[in-house]
Image (cartoon, rainbow, N blue to C red; front, side, top):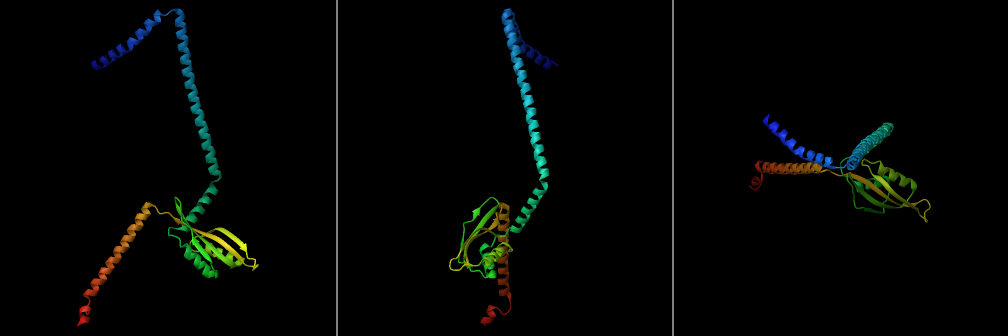
Length: 237
């Protein structure tokens, strides 16, 4: 109780001084000055109240606008839900088809050319294009003296193989010497998934495990050869 009384007395003394000072100043003012001070105080209070009301209504208006935008977004999502699910399914299917193994772009193109009996005049690999999730690998091909049907079948064979490959560029020119033959230049593209740090660590551990297993097998085989009867010493005898 004594502590509470001390705090109360100190607060009264601290707050009483400015109140007494203001009261004395107010008493010394002329009536005209009092009216000016009272009017100025009322104006300040009115401006502060108006500003507070404006800020409150502005916040409420912003909340209403945000809620309206959220409702519109939800309505749009609900309207296009089936399209979104279909697109996501297509994306997941395509990613599953791409897999995690690196593409064998050149080998698959050569296999398709052998199956369709197509002669590739020139081929050159492009520099891989790096992305956040995928690495793009591309090969430029030049084919001379091919008919349209053979070219179509060759492209179909490339794009419907085991690993997904896409023909992203195609240029065709007719040969003047042979009306039914074409010179074609095309670009075949494949994608490789960028491995995360965890996947890279897993692959490194798996490689180290395979190497250790090979060493163990080699040691076991050597010890078996040394312990077998009629080994090297027997042959020397």
